[in-house]
Image (tube, rainbow, N blue to C red; front, side, top):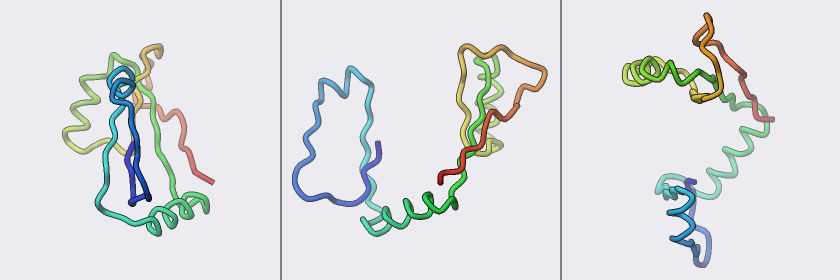
Length: 98
């Protein structure tokens, strides 16, 4: 979770739950509430396109190589249940937020 902007009041967090659930919270010093509102409006207007691809665990070394050299467009999800196919880098879906 990334928190953008400064909400009024406190933000109580259970450290116990964070550790057990492996939750990470980061603050972003860049941006205001207006920036967040505008970015959500961009997404709502369909101006944001998320590119998501799934690949099998067997491709993990290749995935890391492509990540190190900046050859990954969008995001890759490692699917433990996916079998390796001849089309190893097949795009599963592109999501346009509307």
